[in-house]
Length: 328
Image 1 (cartoon, rainbow, N blue to C red):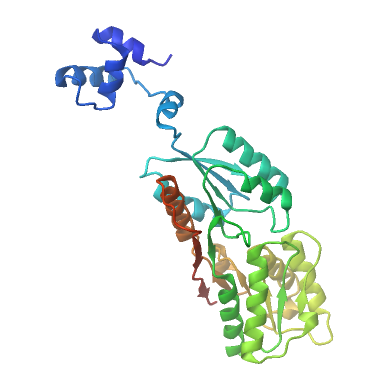
Image 2 (tube, helix red, strand yellow):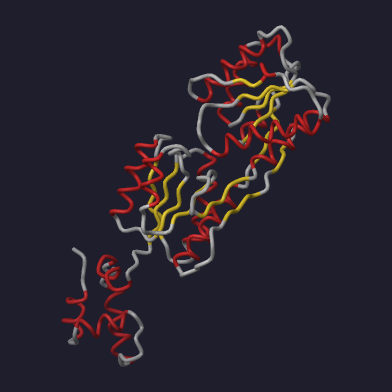
């Protein structure tokens, strides 16, 4: 059974309000009385009633976070968030959307019911999903978007500079003598996917290499299966590509899976993509990637949200983080 202010007040022989002031280090409480109250509270493992405290402060000191999954990419983001939130006294309540817009809305509603002070969201609702966008527009607490954003919206966001990263990757491949480059995208109305495609086209135009329409591939299936099936189709072309770029880590792994199953292609196809995982260094097939600064993404998103909670009235914050080319 937890001990409350009333029990401590009875032991010390003072009022409940005096105990409350003493535990807040209020200078109006006599020093010896304060020391005795604090000692008893510590010995009895007293824990403050956060619900009651929030009624006074109008803050729960909690931040709602919704991620699509809990894979290593998300761990790095979470670590970055925690490194800023924890020293500021904020706890993080986590929801997982499983890349499902309907579940994302349910998770957001649950967090808001818990009266979180603000929200950080890896948005999977899509830029054309009016139901999701209308819901977010009616949320009264500050929101910061991660990794992807909603064009023409008011929300602060922290994302990677996907377009520039994709362009640099194409330039790198061309510098290695790869003129015939394929790009595997996926059917998802996310800004990150669109900007990676735009960057790929920027790179092809800048390097003045030929754009083969049949090298722009996409299948209507899950991410890794999409990479696998598109690679099969590309390899069966009369003039197959020399290099394949996957628009996400999962898509790229689908490419690798196909090539591993077809050893006759070993050394003939250069594989590259987005998102860098530690295990890529151990694969038989080298994979050059565009790595995102995920920890920094989390840190900056948390910093912006805390500034909003402390009353920063500045206009929309739009942060594009530089990417890093990891050559293998």
